Image (tube, rainbow, N blue to C red; front, side, top):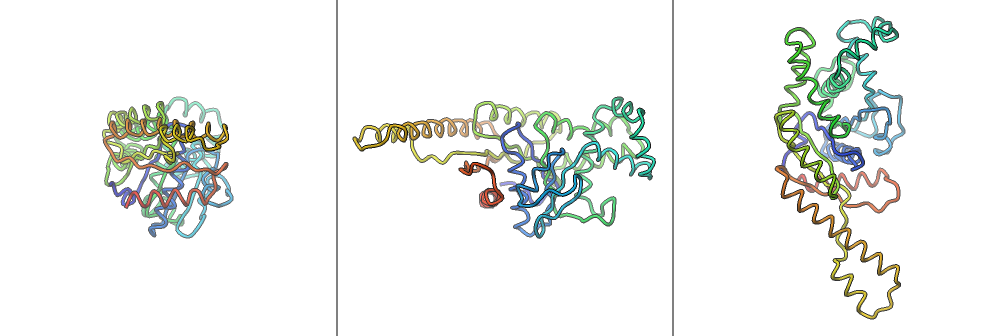
Length: 308
């Protein structure tokens, strides 16, 4: 089993709707439970992670402590770009002037991948000691809830692309440092999240190969989320209906549907494990109508047990 909590960066991605934010939050709780000072960050402005971790969202972009040893932040790519420019130019005031002009829009349009580069750089920067701003807290591990697979791969590829293009100078130097960290399995881990269904499993197996082709490295771990507990097999459901016991029709139908769905999931899990070149962990289906911090804590315990 990979020791992903030994890495400074853990990068979580997957097909949209499979629960990657939930898994990132659970990994954050699991890491913090091991005594690691942990940052869980998300890319975007939706600020879902604080709620999953039991906190009220603070100002966008502010690094927020949600419990002892556990922090979270939402990274707005536009704000990350402004902060990166301020670091390069040495003047936040000058950046404010630039970003209010049309020239800034032309610059971004002329440099496709710039937002991806600075977002990846911001995630990397949070794992550094010291950080760019010496007053910012340092962390033992940074767990990043990345966008869905295609966008995530573009983001992780951007530092190497800019390093290859620039070759020399501060942009090349910094992009090269980020690219080396992302390519080094001793420094970073890539976790793919899926659910046991045909399309998400197929996309995850495709992501496994695309990661090698794009980043020249393997995934480190696959997490299959929302797995039903097999309480009834189809055979047992059939026997239940034939016993003569007074079972309401709707209950019998529900048992049959659950057994059939669990059987389909198990077939997809078998397909996933057969095609995966890395360990596959499973997280149980949650019965809560809305995800709660207690649910995330329960998933964190499941992950901890399987990761050993």
